[in-house]
Structures are given as structure tokens and as C-alpha cells.
Length: 329
Ligand code: UDP
Image 1: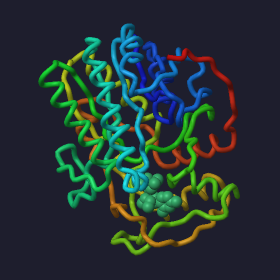
Image 2: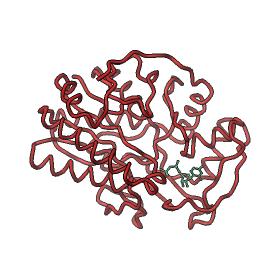
Image 3: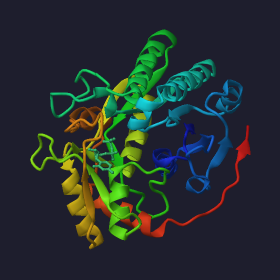
């Protein structure tokens, strides 16, 4: 079975491609390489195309059986400053992909959603039925696209799975794939850069939250566990053919200071830090209730914070380059 991974050259898509291939699926990468990396997917069939290009999508959708959609703008803070860009890519362009998928007669669609759809919920841990109150344009576009999927499912027979990731982190155990973006904004790569001296210190955005040590708590989930969840979601669509929505997280939260301590343990290096004011829009605590994914998707994460940090540390140390060829639309 051939699966089109739109945005498949990025951090999560490239890990999913590997896992699909190990499980006997054929991943086909469709990416404009605005933030993706050819060397991450050089062993697979690659199409250099735009998500907004309906004709190009239709052409390449002729030969696939399912679509996974990873191509999105994904910086919460940036989305507040540039909502226009976020709505254009994450809604308008994503709808072009959805229309092309439905018009091509493909009925299986897997969407990278986010816990950002929940905003700052009072009820913890967060279940799939926790009300959605996204606080940023990024979260709003993810929630709105989920709504579009529901409507398309009801009207056109599309079957979809929306996967609400908590904090994706870590790297492939091979050391050949990992987080590589510019500018880097995520905590774990920034902590490891500070440990290795590639940055002078990691900033801690606020130590006056209502949490045990005053810093924000997040549920960090290993990228290869997320990759396995995509394969399980595809299996579910193939075998059950029912649309659904799942939270993907570990159910355990770690504060910023706990992440820094664990990174010091893994790297055996001191992490210089600096306390800064709170970052606007950061909820104090986000922790996933993974029960529904465990029951219905038969998925639960196999790796914890130490595996996340040790694979991310290996990735940071190795981080080698390999070239790639691709078809151009
Ligand atoms: N954070 C931090 N310093 C940084 C980057 C992040 O203190 O340089 C904090 C951030 O405020 C949040 C947590 O680390 O509480 C995770 O942030 P990240 O940007 O990695 O993911 P997010 O939760 O925003 O999706």
C-alpha cells in the first residue's frame, strides 16, 4: 500500500516514513522543502511539490491509497504575530490537499493535530472530550481543520484519524534523523545546545507558575512512539474504517527544571540557565490522558524522558549529511 506523506521530509514525517517502510507500507514523500530535509528521506520516492498546488497533488494522488498530512506552520508564538500565514498554510492550503484527496477518491486521511487545540484546560489529564479552547492562531487552525475533516467525513465518506500530539521530542535511535529547524524554539534541543556549549545558556520562561518548582510542565512524547501511532492509525482505518481522534502523550509531565536536570544526567554536562519572564500563551501544565489511544488504537509510548534525551543527544552529536534526488512538480 502506497501512502503519500505531505510534509514528509520534516521532523515527524521523516520518522513516520521510516516506520511505515519497516511495516511494509510504501511511503511517498511530497514536500516543498521549505523546512524539510532531503537527507531525512533520501531512500524513498520524493516529489518536490506545493501543498497549494491542486493539479500537482491530483497527479501524484493517482497512485496512492492513503494520505498523511504533516505540512504545517507550527510555531505557537509566530502564529500570534503572523496569523495570516498560519491560516493560509494550515487552513487554505490544507483544504486544497483535502479537496484533492477527496476528488481523487482516496478515503483514508491521517492528520497531525496538536494538544494546542485545548488551550489551557483546567481539567487534567486532558482527554479527547476535554473542551477545545485554542489560545493561539496555530491551535485555532488545527481545531478548524479537525472540524473540516468531520464535515468531509459526514458528506463525502472520507475516513480520518486526527492525532493530537503533546510535546514531540527525541530522535531516531540511529542518530540519522532528529529535530533540525531554524530558529530552534523547542525546549529539549535548546537545553542540549546549552549543555554542549553551542549556546551560552537555556532560557527558562517563567519560574513563578503554580507548579511544584514554579516552571511549566509538559508531556514529552518520543518521536518514534508518535511514528508508531501513525502506523496504528493507518491499520485502524484499513481494518475498522472509522474516523476518530486520539491524544498522543505519555501521561507523565516534567517541568522545565526537571528536563534540565535529566539532560545534565544524560550528557554528564552542566546546563547553564537563565530565568526570563513568562512566554505569552504558555499554559502552566499540559498532561495527556492516553487511555483512549491505548484501548482503541492499541498504542502506548514505549520510551520515557531519558530515552528522549539520550536519542536527542546522540542526534546532536552525530547530525551528518547525505544528499538526495527528487521529482519536481
Ligand atoms: N521553554 C523554556 N525555554 C525555552 C523553550 C521553551 O522555558 O527556550 C518552556 C516553554 O515555556 C514550555 C516548555 O518549555 O513551558 C516547552 O516548550 P516548547 O517550545 O518546547 O513546546 P510547547 O509546549 O510550546 O509546544
